[in-house]
Length: 185
Image (cartoon, rainbow, N blue to C red; front, side, top):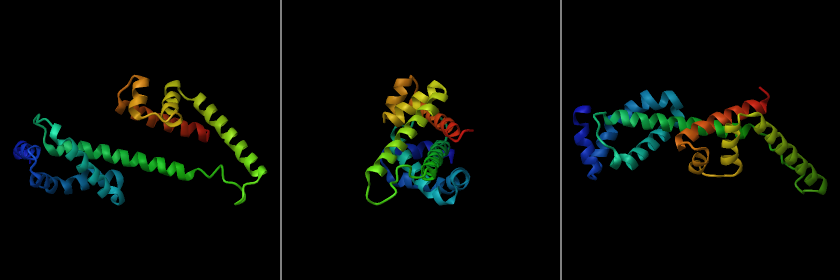
């Protein structure tokens, strides 16, 4: 495939949609079987593949030929998208595991039920604060900026003096450390 990658790339960058289709046909099976399915399984493979090609299409205009084939570039995108899917799955699973701490005992909130809910919120806030306090300060800061203050990934990265991808890794590690401390491990 490398022999005519450069020519194919030029046609795609000139807006030839059929050439992108050719690239898709040449790489789809290999990406699915060798890169994506082994990482995310068959249920999410097509979604990850779709995201891979969407990202490739968005970025192909800026792609500069350096002698590395398009397949390697697509594989790198696919690995990143598979990792994003796995992280997303992990976040969803951890949120589903948390019981509704604020569920009121009856359909009609009573003064007592509201007091119980307020007490649970205070206790939860204290436990979150204590757990954050037990983490490495950089991890705690990353979690506070992103989750408590709701800042964007780029804003968090700037505040911590790192790149956005580095912040993503930092946040991932901080989340894992928080989960371990929360569970008392």
